[in-house]
Amino acid sequence: MNGEHVLVVGYGNTLRSDDGVGWHAARRLAADPRLEGATVLARHQLTPELATDIASASLVVLVDVSVAGAPGSVSVRWIRPRPDRPPAWSHHLDPEALAGLAGALYDAVPPMAVVSVASTSLAVGDRLSATLERALPEVVETVTRVVEEHRRA
Image (tube, helix red, strand yellow):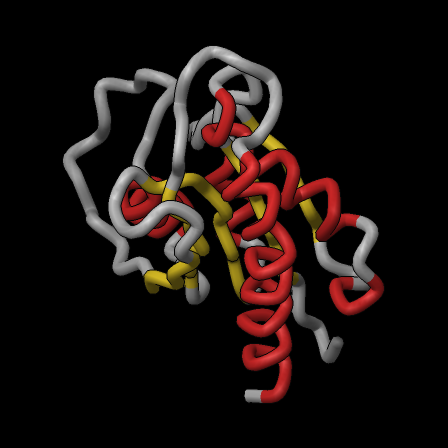
């Protein structure tokens, strides 16, 4: 891996149906041999504490649900840090603010991507909708493709 450190963070609420897709993807990605050596985390939300992990990574891939797009559609969005004034320190940051925080605290922001999948349901429940269950392999393939492209570059 030539000194690389890839960080993958799947996040969301596992008790809100499709909002838990980040956790399901993280579980599969942690066991995927194509991501050997990567750190794969599952979190309920993005928090300031992740800035340390981000600053020490060569690539960060976040996995989350989206409310935009056709249900089950998978997309990749590259993050540009947003150097906000210091946040109110709630324990919830969007990806751009988290990247900006890593830059402000550690002067280091690696390439960051969000792989998202459009939801069918965010209702109370601990299972993914059938649509997102079917989309989960594509989410995993998309994350591994982003990581493999980074490693080749």
